[in-house]
Length: 329
Image: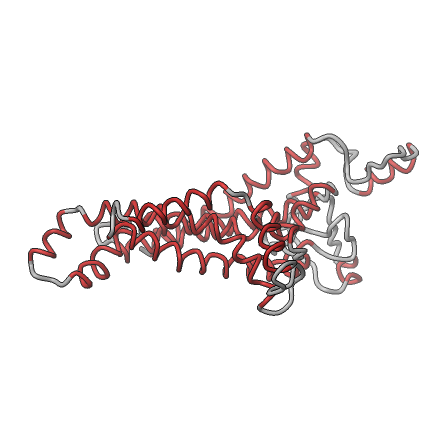
């Protein structure tokens, strides 16, 4: 187990480097630059900007400049200048996990922007996924135990409806009903608990639907397996068979889905954040693309790719506890 974890952790850095390289290349292939305006800049001004950020160099040198920072900078800008710590456009320092300064917000580093906006997305995403797990698992388990019943058909119908209705449609509908008509919850902004109810529900519906369908399919497969029939033949009560033997194997598809789902929630909340005016990480990611803020885009992409790999590692480790047949070499 330990060697497996160490191998997976060592893979994270080269995989993150590959993601950053592909993202960097796509940004450079996209038309326009961060200093592009409706009125073309004078050639001298444009030349100075290119020289300042290393854009006058060949592409391969620009790529090396992006990865060329090895000295960690301090919180004191004067000390950084004395120590020769310089950051070109989109520069990455893997040693210190530093992505330089934002081009749109020059007084803030990319790390600061991520740390400032991540709590909003994390709070919204975690609450949404907890709600989705609670209702999705319950609906999927009951639907599997009562296969072809009215509850089974009704729950799967609602699951398909949840998959079909996009967030940008569901969010305004909930606002129109519960905020503008019934006045139960605030329509926007990030405040107390009441302000989280509508965005959490909006975000959780699609995940709830996926979890319900995965749980139902997994439980149906497990409940028909030989070891479940053996457990029942030994005289174990149905509650023990379900919770101790069936549930551990039945929720493995949900566990597999949880890793990438949690990472997607950190940046995939952009529609919900727009609808409810929440200053989360997904919102900043979209703005960084529109602004051609290359350091911020690279920093968010790298952070999310690392989170996906970490979450997937946690999921793989949890397999061994859920299913004793799984072994790590």
